[in-house]
Structures are given as C-alpha cells and as structure tokens.
Length: 359
Image (cartoon, rainbow, N blue to C red; front, side, top):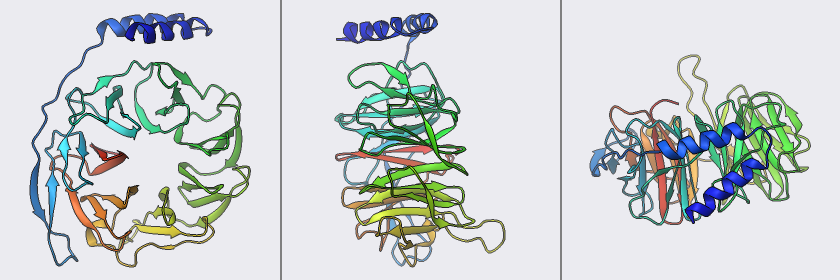
C-alpha cells in the first residue's frame, strides 16, 4: 500500500509542469524523515473558582508540555495526546474528521487516527510549512499556509494540490464549501468565490479582512474586522448583517442558528466584554445569546458545538454548557507557563484541543 501511494505521488508530479524540483524534494524528504516523541503527561485535576459562580468547578489542569489534548468523555477529562510530535512543535490548527485527525504546525502537517485511544502522530509529506488553518472538504481537507495560499488533499492519497494558483490574495483565513459546488475563501482583502474547483476566482466582496465563514439553508455569513457579513444569493453579493466598530472573532452554525463572537472595545477603561451573538433567522437579526456570561468567560474568543454540548474558550481555559449556553462548567484550565489560546475539533466521541503558545 505504501508503494502504491508513493507511486501515485510521483505519477501526479510527472504529469504537472515545473515539478522536477518537487520530485527531488520528495525523495530527499522520504530519506531524512524522522520523528520525535514527547512524553505523555498524566492528567491532574484542580479546583478552580470563577468569580461570579457560587460553586467551584473541578477542572483538568494539563501539564505545560502538553500541546494537544484529547477527551473521550464529552470534555469532562483531558489527557495528553502528543505522542510522535516533536518536543518543540508549535501547532496552530487541528481538524478531526471521519477516522483521522490532522494537526497543522509551523514545522508542517501531522496525521493520526481518531480511533486510537492514544493517538500517535506521523509527519505528512507536505511541501509547505507554517500551517495556520485546516478546513473540511467534500473531496478532501484543505490546508492553509501563512500568506502562501491553500491546498487540498485528494482523499486516499498523499497528494496535496494547490487551489490558489489563480487566487489574487494568498492571505487566506477561512475556506468554505457551500454544498452546491461553490468554494469560498476569506482573505485579507475580502471574499473570493470559485465554481470550478479553484481554477478561476471572482472577488465577490472587497473590504476588510474576513476571518471565518459559515453556511446554512443557503445563507452565508462571514466574520470580519468590522462586524458580520451576510449573503442570500449563493455568495454573489454581500451586505452588512451587523456593522460595528468591534471585530467579529468568529462565526459558526449551531442547532439554534448562527452564533458569532464580537470583541469588546479595549481602547478605553472600563474594557468592554466580548459578546456571544445569536441569529435564529438566517443572520437577518442578532441578539445576545446570554444575558450574563460568567466572569471567566468575559473574554470568550471561540465557541464550538460538539453533539449536545457547547464548548467555549477563554484565557481561563475551556468551558462546557449542557443547557445551550445558559450555564457553563469549567472543564479545562489554562496550563501554567503556556499560552492561553485554544482550538477545538471533534469527531464522534473524541474531542481534540490545541494549547497554543501565542496567537
């Protein structure tokens, strides 16, 4: 099987122009490819109180050496899951999908199996490093490289094809398929659309940086540094659904509708808190999702839906809600000596989170 996959790569490269150098890199990379294992740290628990809560919560406290953590019990406990990763890996993106999980880092791309009780990572042969995003795709996942565009993996192979060759703006922050044959990317200069798998691109919105995209029932929304955009005509035209002076950090679709996070103004005292905003009418109108967030979530910057639960991330760690955002339980504390930035991805019973040192 390994020989067949290797043969596929060489055949694909020989049938593309200007790829003799890539073939040389491939041969060299396969010879020098090696892996380093980091020590899997045991899980500890600690009692951490949140101001504004009457009951202290029992939370997992990861070791400072843990870069990727895994939970198989709905986020109640977390274990180190970094076996096979270099000790000094700087990870920025994670995507769990079907039976595999991908991890993007400054040093490249790593792959593991979600079915393993203790994931063992292997470095993927990938021509570019400095990976900042991984997104799902019908024909295979997309990987974004910092200021270098993005690539798609052909399912069942080791082949990664560039999708950005004719894309004007290579500073890609978000990748989204709308389920109707169109591909969208959020970039530094706005939003671009392709209907032919990235062979040609049309800029459908020219404006501030677009950091995330979501789609549901034919409606597309995007978060920007000035608020939230919305399109109801397959992404051909975009209008402001929520125009503000505060950036929208992210936008997602959950069971109730679209949910976005607006960053509070930090220019003057008192500093405004971040807001969870919910739209139940396809992004036409937005209301606060919760009238009163716990103090430890007042700087919330990410929200994900995993099964029946909602998970929110802040500088204090990760919180879980069992009642659709009405109350929150602190389930993972930010480790001492590590960054306070988390990224979540889930597949089945496995939830993976990155502990990122810096942003």
